[in-house]
Length: 83
Image 1 (cartoon, rainbow, N blue to C red):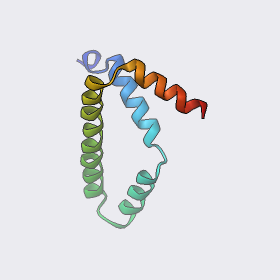
Image 2 (cartoon, helix red, strand yellow):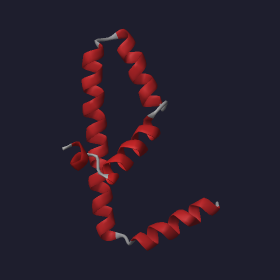
Image 3 (cartoon, helix red, strand yellow):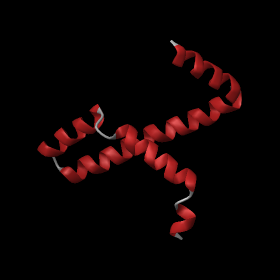
Image 4 (spheres, rainbow, N blue to C red):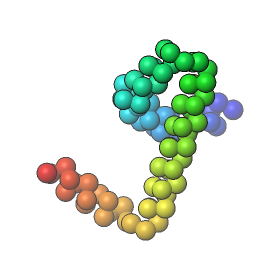
């Protein structure tokens, strides 16, 4: 069962999200909030908030991918990297 769940795309998404979130301002704010308030409520709130935010990003990315070609996105990202 673990092998079915831990696919390469799952691991990539997990690692990218974990590394992107590690040490950012929202995590620092969550640490501060948990130090003064109920840590269980803060944990549940943070998980739900992050899940909704990530869900919107995934759905938005999927919808955007139906309208914009990957080639255009690549060209645009290369253009931004040059400047």
